[in-house]
Amino acid sequence: MKLCFGLAGLLMVGSLLDAQDLSASQTARFVKVLLDSSHVSSLTCADPGMKDALEGAGIRLDGSAPAIFCNNPGLARMAAGSGKLVIGSRRDMAAHAAIVVTGEGGKPKFLVNPAVLRKSRVQLGDAILRLAEQH
Image (cartoon, rainbow, N blue to C red; front, side):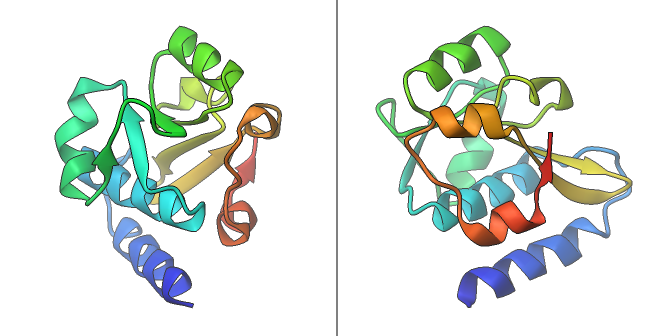
C-alpha cells in the first residue's frame, strides 16, 4: 500500500515536468521505487553522471548488487547475460535494458523489455509491471 501511494505521488510530481525526459534526481527517485518494489537493497551504477543522484535518493551503491543502472548497450548486454536487472534512462536502451525509466510529454514512463527481464534473477513488482509499457 505504501509503495502504491509513493508511486502515485511520484507520478503526480512527474506530470508537472515540462521536459521530454526526467532529470537525474527524478530518474533516481523512480529507480528507488523500482528497487523497493523488487526487494533489492543496492544497485551497481555504471553511469558516473547518475551516481550522486542515486545516492541522494537513498540507494546504496554496490558493485556486486543484483541490479545495475547503465546506459551503455554493450555493458547492459553483459550485465543482463549475468542475470542482473538492467535499468537505463535513455530510450535507445529499450532493446538492451530490462526496464527504462524515461519521460514523455512531461510524464514519467517505464518501458519494459520482457526478453531482457526474463534473463534477470530479479523480479519486478506487480505494480510496476502493470504501469509499464511493454517494449
